[in-house]
Image 1 (cartoon, rainbow, N blue to C red):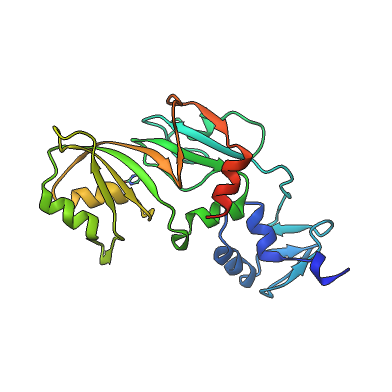
Image 2 (cartoon, helix red, strand yellow):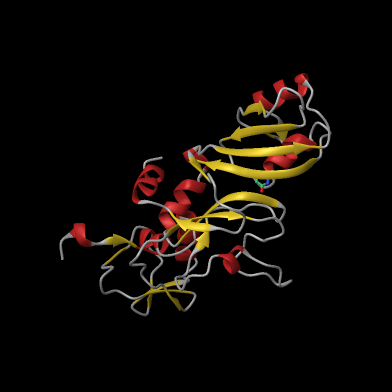
Length: 239
Ligand code: URA
């Protein structure tokens, strides 16, 4: 078989699931990955994806044939997770399809708005990577009007848990009420927007993601979802 028809083992696992390549390399070096029943601990090992059988912790990796890309308008009080021990409603309860998909990143339980779901692991990992610098826009309702000195600090970067946030863009929605605004950030740290405002004593009363990497929800209602168009997938793939 020509070398070009072979696929790196970590790439094969990444494109058929939710794990990052780094995590997969750890699994390989820990001896948790088998190819045709033989444990492979060599990073960079190549397989014939058409016929080799790959198991991670004894579970067969099923090759994804049809790639699925979905946009959901996540409602409030829904968890971004495949399942929930506390039996709360998850995003998977809203998107009812037979194929196994997973969310690209996460929105907090009380954050609403644009969430992507896919079965394309490479696509998801790329979008979630801090290197991709994907812009996300959030509509924020604060507990009190944002002061100009804090707006300037937030747009410049705030030190959160010893790491400075990257520059952000803030626009007020109306000239009359400075407690309603839009913020665009190119990072996706856990609860980042809430923490940025909390840092200066503002409580985030409502948080809604209205745009992700140039995609917008437009007129989609809460709980509504749709497949991305081919053009939309191409645009995201080129990021
Ligand atoms: N920032 C937050 O604080 N929460 C989200 O859900 C998304 C971004």
